[in-house]
Amino acid sequence: MGYETSFKIALLGNEDTSVVDEVIKALCLHTPYRHWGTSRKWSPGKITGDDCTWSHHQRDMGFISTLFPTITFEVEGAGAEQGDVWKEYYLNGKTARYEAVFTIPEYNPDDLT
Image (cartoon, rainbow, N blue to C red; front, side, top):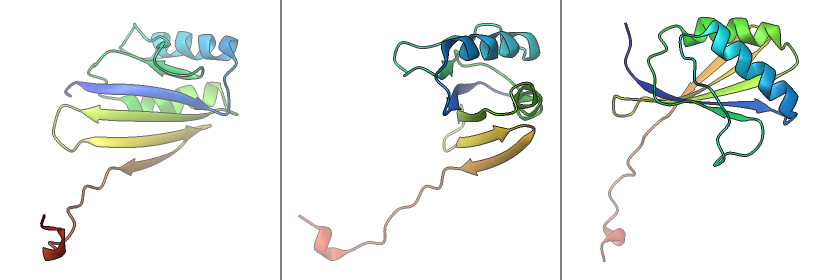
């Protein structure tokens, strides 16, 4: 079970529209979400979807990355829970995940205006 997350996927170093189309087909075939597409707000090579529940995105993206072994996928997620912001990278079945770190600077009296 999961909750809604906003996903954005970038194909790093590849803006070939035919490859993007093939990746969109693979996403529609191998993920529970069927409405992937390119957004006019994003540059070529960017794929977006509406907010969705994609509980096994790491497994699915790991597999999809093996179908396109020379493409590095950047998956950006923003979850429904506050602070759930992250990026993951996939290349030929390998993955790396980076979670956002929120910090508040120390109080400095000189900042008072």
